Each structure stands twice: as structure tokens, then as C-alpha cells.
Length: 160
Length: 264
Ligand SMILES: Cc1cc2nc3c(=O)[nH]c(=O)nc-3n(C[C@H](O)[C@H](O)[C@H](O)COP(=O)(O)OP(=O)(O)OC[C@H]3O[C@@H](n4cnc5c(N)ncnc54)[C@H](O)[C@@H]3O)c2cc1C
Ligand code: FES
Ligand code: FES
View 1 (cartoon, chains in turn green, orange):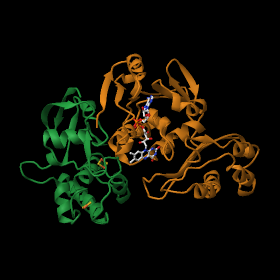
View 2: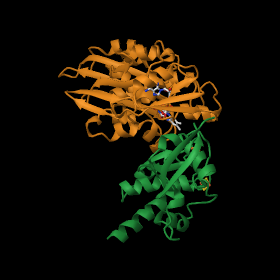
View 3: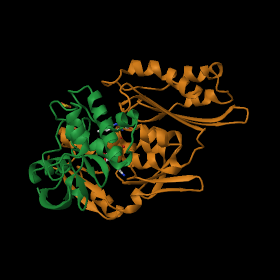
View 4: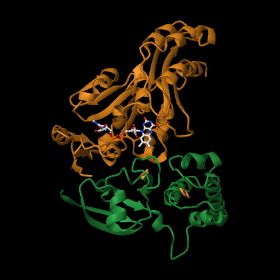
């Protein structure tokens, strides 16, 4: 299979790789680039564990071909903490016990990040809608919803 | 997975490449890449087009033109498309809506194709290859279609003339038990003067409920007057059975949900 060059920005750093044509972004990130924060759950678009942010929009890396991301800005959960300090969403998930096995967590956090970037003070319904593409087998969702709402409150207090 | 992707800057070049066997067009990839991940080896090669016009939304003089690569998310947030936004919002969760395209939705087998159901009620035209095809004819021949769809067009409905309903078990983003779209023109006294009703999950692709449409003509939208339309809506349907619902169940609840949509 022919190898093709792919170049994009990942969490602020330039990445350039040769990949097999038709490789999914999930596969390229995890197995070529070594960012294992997006998880492969279903590879069918149903679980959301592989969610990443591409050019500001939440997308499923298991259904995205890496070649279509040339020149894109890609964000994953691995890039959220800055200088060893957790992102407010990550902090809130720990504080609210919103993560158990943690498999769904990177995808959920990316979905929540897009929500809070656009809607800093979301309602509970906004959170439920934003996370509706993410399956969690452990938490029963309520701690996750509470964590996202808590992160939003913490953000608005910091902004005030 | 052995898929090769070819990227073209023009539809013309991509159309030529699409003629090779085992080659399919890549829209948002939510069905075609999923199929490849699942082990579907019938597709060995994908083509895509980067022409910006494919992602354009134009609303002018009451006509809407949606490029085939326009996503459900783009429709849902467009200020002039509020009347059809509920149908776009009904497709999947947020990430799916950011990827799922109008073009791909036309090809989605039941239980998918919720936006195509809306387009069928709206009497849309589908532009592919050299010309425009009425959506009903397009859907009927879609399995043999080898030309890239570039756009769909329709008259923007008045908010009160277009109704859309998706019934699902998991809220807010479950897959359809069924979906219904209705375009109703009414006289000043509320009498229905024209009706187009499209159904999702009642066949392998969106279909019209023509007998019910006829039965609505001259009716006011009251429970007594719509009863004959509800009794007729099951005519000609062959609902799908899948893990969400059986064909029997879908047929049983169809008149109930059409009634709710018409009386809402
Ligand atoms: C988890 C999940 C949930 C979903 N939920 C829903 C839902 O609720 N409602 C719903 O309607 N759908 C749903 N879908 C199905 C799908 O996401 C949508 O139907 C979507 O609109 C398909 O578009 P696409 O661009 O992703 O298609 P693709 O996967 O890119 O393509 C699908 C087919 O259409 C062909 N095609 C695509 N674009 C063109 C074109 N321009 N010209 C010619 N051929 C073309 C492709 O070759 C392929 O055969 C869901 C899918 C997943 C994975
Ligand atoms: S792995 Fe991508 S949605 Fe499940
Ligand atoms: S914490 Fe285990 S799947 Fe969500």
C-alpha cells in the first residue's frame, strides 16, 4: 500500500508522518505518533471514546481518515494539561469521581471542552446533549454531568 | 484495513476515478469508513473532492442550495435554515453531526437517512453528474448511481408549513424507530390544500405516504378529520426490523406518531 505524507498540528506541535493511505486518524495518532489519549472503543462511531477536536469541531478519529487532516489543528486530551497543571475539566473529573476505569474519559473531556469553549455557562440539558455521543460503562453519567457543570462554574469564577 | 484515498480538486476528475470498480465516494465517512472498519472489503478505494462549492450553503429568493459536503451541524446552526434545523439536529450525536454530510445522508440505508426524509417531504432536487433529478427518482435509483452528488436544492418552507418528527428510544441521540416529515399548505381557515408526507424506516429508504397525503386534502387538522389519513398511512409500507424495533412495532406506532405530528 502506498505511503502518503500527512502534516498537521497536534496540541500545538507540528507533526509530519508517512502513513498508509486509508489509515484512520485514531490509528495514526496512537500507533504512529504515540498519542494514546484517544481510545479505540467501537471503531463504529457509537462510543465516542476516540473523540478529538479538529479545527475547533468535535470529530470521531476512528471514522476520520488521517489524510483528510492535512493542515488541520488537532487537539487531544493529552494536550490539555499545561506545565503539569491539569485543565479545569480534568481537575473537575477527578474531584467529582467522574471517572472510574477512565476509558471513556478522554473522549468525554474533549466533547465537554468544545461545549465549554462555546457555551461557558451551560445548562444541564446542554451538557447532556453535548455528551450524547459518548458512552460510559462505569459512572452512570451523573458524576460526569456534575463534573462538567463544576468546571463551568470554576471557569466563570476565575473569569469574574 | 486496505483503503486507498484519492483526493481531487474537481468533481469532474473525481467522477472519472469513481468509475473504477471497488471505488466509492468519501463524504463524512460515518458510514463508509465505519463499513471498512467493520471489515467490508467490497470498497478498496475512496475518492473525495475538495472543491469549496461542495460545502456552500446558499439561501436566496426562498430557494436553498446545500452543497453535498455540507454537514448536519452546519445546517443546524445556519440562521436562515431554522425551519429544517430539527431534521439536521436529529442525526446522531454532536461529533456525527460535525461529520455527516447531506450527500451521504441520501445514500444512508434505514434506520438512517433522517435528513433525506425531510428532503423528500420538501420535494428537493438532487444535482449529480450533468443534471437535476427529483429526489424521489434519485432515491429509487440510488443503488446504481455512479455520479457524485454535488448539491440538493429546495424551496425554504415557512416554519409553520413544515413539520419533522424523529422517534427514538434513547434520548437525545438514539437511532430512529421512525421519522416523519410533512409539508402542509393550508388555507386561511386551516383546511389542508396540499400535503407531502415522507416516512423513514418504513422501507429500506425514505418513502412517500401518498394515500395519507390524499386523505388529508380538504381536512382541518382535528383528530376527527385526520382519522382517515392515519388509517391510510400504513398503505404500501414495508418497515425494517432491526435491534431498535420490529417491523410490526414500527407499523403499529406509525399512525400514532403521524397523529401527534399533525395535531402538534
Ligand atoms: C453512531 C452513528 C449514528 C448515526 N445516527 C444517524 C441518525 O440518527 N440519523 C441519520 O440519518 N443517520 C445517522 N447515521 C448515519 C450517517 O452518519 C448519516 O446518514 C450521514 O449523513 C452519512 O453521511 P456521510 O457523509 O458520513 O456518508 P459517507 O459514509 O461518507 O458515505 C455514505 C455513502 O454515500 C456515498 N456518498 C456520500 N456522499 C456522496 C456524494 N456526494 N455523491 C455520491 N455518493 C456519496 C458514499 O460513497 C457511501 O456509499 C449515524 C451513523 C453513526 C456512525
Ligand atoms: S472508537 Fe470511535 S466512536 Fe467508538
Ligand atoms: S469510566 Fe469506565 S467507561 Fe466511563
